[in-house]
Length: 368
Image (cartoon, rainbow, N blue to C red; front, top):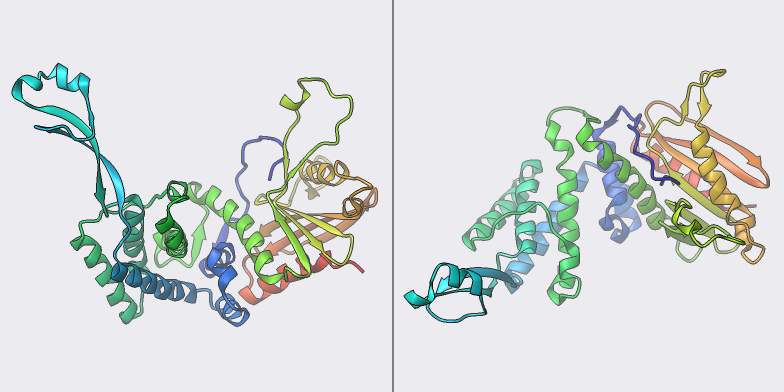
């Protein structure tokens, strides 16, 4: 994350093999956290199988939901009636002189299964169908689509999860909605069907940046034992202020880290900040130098948090982590008692190597 509110620059990851896009999507998904170790490794080695697994889980979940009946919701409706229902629209009723005709315009709620959530679930089946090669799953998906159409439920590729936060049926459908969200993400690379690489065109630029960050976080949570490791994401860091003016808080930039890892048995902290730009650039005197703004940002994360009452803050390592293609960099230096690491993950490699390299970098937190 950026220390300041600067505009996002274009990523330097020019092309990524589609199978590694699947891999990043797997790491970033909530589904990855629920899989057993053996199943995770199997999917990591064959990320293309992710579509088949998601399709199986989706068809099973929707099948059970249709057997129990779909959840209902209220939808606001406006209609001219000959009796009062709900709230009267006095303005329209008077303007159109409806009372003289024995009519009134009302606003009222009707109970329906054509809700935003059900439209979202329906649309996921349409996004999933073109990606399936298994005949049995294809037939199951087609049956689901036919059922939704028979129930006259529309489609929507957007759904606001917060609207159903306090709804019991929304909580019950949490796993199904997670699968739907993953299905829509998996559908993005298929826009370039038949192409073996995903070009980073403008419309997917921000998506790919966010994906890499979420993938690293998801990988961490699934592969580091919570009994041994403590993981924090999106943590806000605060400046240690003294003698501050009343308005300074309006001008100090925010500090928010991507990922913080601590080993519970030692006083060592690893602060990771993911970047999706080139790890270096050309300066006036050197062909390749690390970006000073990124170093200053990491320096602020480390030095601004030093506190004797928080031992890990005085024994912290900072890591800048970049996705790259056909390149590997793993450099480090100690500056004022803090180690600074500059690392890359080569997304052109085999998935097994990506997993191995990520584990090696994350386990650096295990201090000696």
